Image (cartoon, rainbow, N blue to C red; front, side):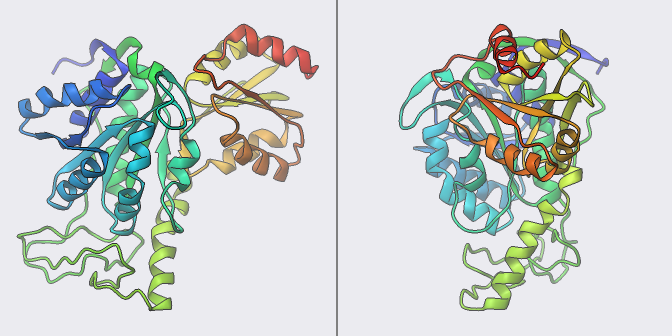
Length: 374
């Protein structure tokens, strides 16, 4: 391959190409606006690379099939939007408990319920974090461009394999359908899961560290898989306090203790006294404001979960005001408030849009000047 190659992709198309580049060879899904183009493109792209595509009867079956394919040794993903994401929550919890690498794309749209199928939103941020029940941790990212749709999909597969966990990519209806130039390089870093050696007598949840190797069916590895509290053999022990505590601590710590390795952010105009915190679509408008005003900084959250608290606290330590943009009624702003105040910054302002319209640069500038912070 000549390096690099440029394409003019839609966001959903870029996700498909990023998934294939990242090693995805199984996709199960059900059509739902605004993610349907992912399913459609996967239907013809996966057979071209020796992969498997299957349209399931609904979103519950889709993520179940993806989890099964992962345990069969394939890198697997599914894609949906808000209503389908709600249906996937139980199986997301199952994937967390069984430590199954799988990638889930949620192209957010206005809700609740059927809501606004063709309009962008950021209403699923807390659902991504806490939608499934019980104590757990999760990895979720938020692209703000078609290029990042490609890049972050590759990264999602790498993270899923490194930490044996579901990884969620939270995008939106507008990013899904916009078209931009995408640069594709040949020297892509691809991670593969650590597996037990053939014939080794192994236990699927036995680990010298936080992430156990993956057993491979048909290679002499023992594997018993259950969503119940289980010991290192995988056998159910739901009434054992110590086993439950050890298991939960490990599946939470393997992500939280690696927060600094996992989290990605972008800081523009470091040291600014007024800092905008944004992610996804609103961060594009915020970037234009920051570029024209050196008194205003931007902290763009690329990784939403685990929350990059150390980076935010560093930014907030010298700021007199933190300004948060979200296309919801206030989800990530609560995390921003919590950690900003720990750093001594008590002024946190929030600019919400929930009707399906995006923040405009001129609106943001007018809002900032109206507060008198610059």
